[in-house]
Length: 171
Image (tube, rainbow, N blue to C red; front, side):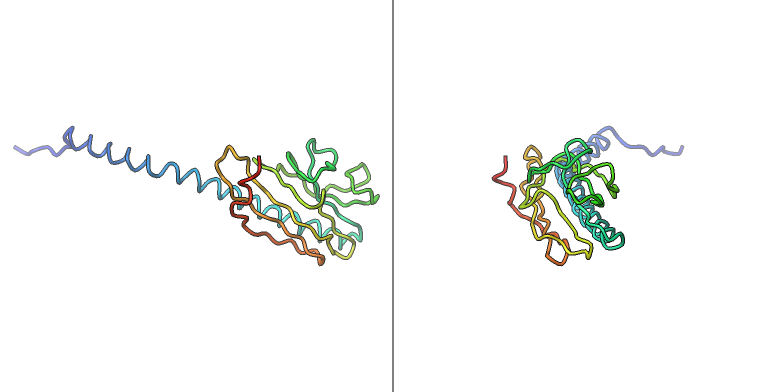
């Protein structure tokens, strides 16, 4: 008579226990990895939006503006951005999104805020920028004190860098 091969209850319980232990170890790291990926994606999105606005300013011989907006309809005057980010060609030169301006891009800021030295990022007709720096910080309930810094040169180039522990004092 041929013996049937099968798993015993003890073997199955051991496998379930091993899987449980591995999942408990991996779950916190998975959450951190996903948060880091989300932040890196947002960081790259800002570089892309900046490049788009700078190129549009040069091609259309018109200033372009990137600003924070709480409602998606107008730029906030504060140096802290939450909610949305608008990028547009500022055809009337008032540094505000209005009917005559051309919207280039609108995106949600994500789970965090940006604070900076200026209330907006601007590029003139030649693509030059107005120097400034901005710091993105995720909201602190995410237990992440690391953000990233956006630095705009006078030549209109935006670069980013990791801002380790720069968000630790933010509330």
